Image (cartoon, rainbow, N blue to C red; front, side, top):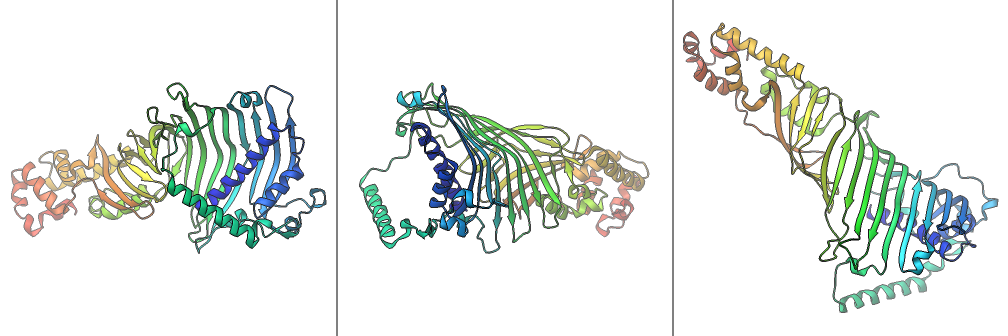
Amino acid sequence: MKKVIYGIGGFFGLLIIVLILALVFAGSFLTNEFLVKQIESAINVRANVEKVNINLFSALSSIEVEGIQLTYRDEVADKGTPLPDRKPLKSSVISIGKADIKLSLIGILQKKFELKKLLISEPKVSFIMFENGGNNLTTLFKAPALVNGEPNPALTPEALAERKKEAEEEREAAKNEPSEPFSAKDIPVAIQMGVVGAEKGDIQVTMKKTGQVIKIQNLNFKLSDIDIDGTNLASHNHVGVEFNSDVTIIGKNKQEAAKFLLDTDGDLQPFIEKSGLVNPSVVYNVKMKEDSFLSGFAAFDAISGELPLLNQAGLKLDKLKEKSILKKDVKFKVAYSDGKVTFLDEPTFPSKNYDLQIEKGSFLVVTTNYHEMKMGILYDEDESKKSIGGVDAKIKDATKGQGDPKELRNKVLGNLIKDDRLFIPFKTTGDLRNPNVTLGVEIGSLTDLLGSAVKGAIKGKIGEELKKIPGGDALKKFGF
């Protein structure tokens, strides 16, 4: 997976470097034919570029590249067939609608890198994870065996030996030099950028082993107002972040299991002011939008299995297994550091069936799916009243109207009632796909709970009946 990420990053890096060099050196050589040759010489794909637009005669020089397509390599790419002689690609594995770059050449002369815009529009990626752990993208980012009909000079035994020798020399040189972490001081020029990122993206991940599909649609990821100067971090140490997307999870049964409509933004300080080291922690403002939904959360299935005693009491939990749609936008803050996402406040997600509350400090490690989260489910008000009312009716009938059913019921159900609604606190840990779930309250034998509560709440004739609790006959009157 890391190799794929590095490969995709390398492709975009190559594209960006070529575009910037074209701007700096007048761009007369930059054509769609030239770009295709560069891409097909570097990675194992067949490529296509529809159009290149260059503007060098304004305050901001700019290049637009339209219609970039990458697909599996074929004989056409191996031979280096000229673009006019190629048939159009019917489909692609990776495509980009447009790459737009705007750069200030005057800034470079003043030792300032002023990139006003680097925006990739409509990127589309189809990612398939095979049952053996491989994927469909790995092969794309290897060096091609043939370039322009000839063996790739970068793969000859001599070239490979030279690369191996250079790598060994770099490792030896690194041993003799003090190892220091990257810091703002290592950036040779001040950096000012307007907008860098991608918009209107569409990524599909298909997992062959489980049959699941994850769709990331309407993806917008942008870094803005980038201002970094290693010599003056007090005044120049800012990056704005925006991430918006619709994430849909489709199960093996081809049904949508969840959809998250996300708007996220943050103001980052990429470096620690005093030390200049990279700041490992980032705080994001997140908005989960109305109509997001969840269906079949593994932790809820575990809760349903752990509360058979509540079902005996007439407190049904069937709604936990139903599709739950968010009734309104919910805003909250999270911190991100080294793959770990931590909740910094305590958001409540209201839905038709229940309100889900997440406690501050709950976290998820996105790289491993490990999590530790304390949550609470506040059940639907009407359903709670119906279920709790049913228990009260049973108590009232069994006690023949003596005593306070609510008082007894509260002693029986304890912390499972909050503001006249059923409340289920729980903790979920381990792998998010197969979590370990424990309840946040003690629920012993319903018989024991009733016995303890009734003894302290009811007197008279009912007290006489409760003396028979060890035999259990009196409890039959409660309907349990």
